[in-house]
Picture 1 (tube, rainbow, N blue to C red):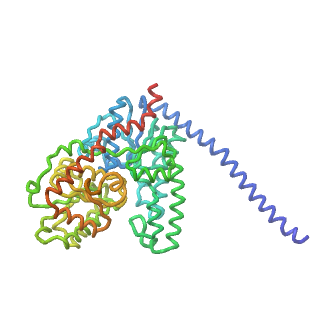
Picture 2: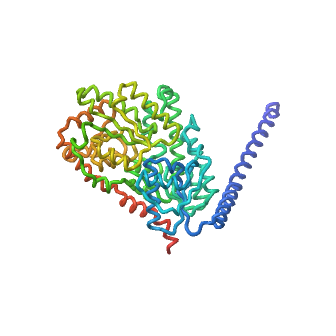
Picture 3: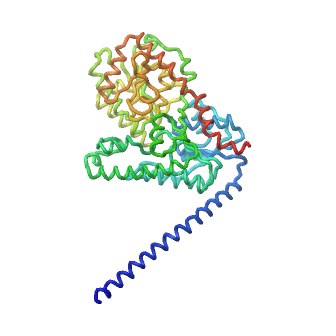
Length: 489
């Protein structure tokens, strides 16, 4: 009897908690759909009231003025849409508040040799900080992904498009634009936000730019990070599969996207546009015409994943292999664009590292140079160098090959899967993994007979036509054509 009296209030308390929980679930099940329907009607009404006439294509690219490979794809995609659908209104969602439209379009022409018609609207987003890695010291992937939703809401409020195309890989915005914005959603993914390779690195406790030393050396923290990555990958797959058409830039990216998003039937491999047409027309300069200098050209944005320190360590190793009189002729030309103060600091760090390794006389940094100067550097170079692990594709690699450079790239990702052939009899370049391998390959090429180098240069040039701008335009338009079909019928 006493036990009964003691248990009664506990049972009543548990029942009350269950009742509250049931009420909350019912509220969510009832109120959330109502809220979503009202939200979607709001954007539908806003779409009808907008000033722009006809079909509006909104392209989400918060860093459209960065000047990298992703921006080349963006402007080539815009040009393709303008050529095929001249009456379509194109809006670029950008966070480059310091650049006006004229400045952005001039830079696209200067950097990529892409001339566009001026009928492009730039929708400026003020919340770009929400997608910057520096905003999230911990749980960076999740923070940036949720931050992209905030930025997407700002974009949708500013201008609700009919067709939404993300060209930077912000997959968490797809459900927002599809289910709330009522848009047709397409994506062009350069690099999966998370990949099975990243999981393997954490599992093996390998130190990298996205796996800190403190985590790699602690089994408990590594286990927690693996669980976090697996849960994030599941969520990433759910939001990514919301896109109606999925474009990827390489077979490496395609494999990872298909394994996570699980939508192979709507996935298209569309190699990024490379300026090979006029580069393969450049005359191949002889060693004498290049002067008494062996130029190693490295083209990459100054971002952590591009791994510029590996280039410098490879040069340090190369010095110990070559004779002094040969080494004095060798020069590494690091060419790239800087997006912000962090990139500029990174360049300063690389310059300091070059001095520390006594390489400052053999290394030169060229920042934000015009396209004409870039072409000149490629033509005068002998070797091309690329050191990023799991580079998703490698536009600069292709263009260096087209210009006549012998490429040495990392033995992973797109360069190994799609671009460089290393089989005897059909060599188009070389692959390496660490500074010692890079140095040995560089030395081998430098010591190679000029005729043997020329055979590789010719083979490399003949292999790059499949990555041309014309092929990109054709495949890109084929992938997005279903979005325009209802408007034409």
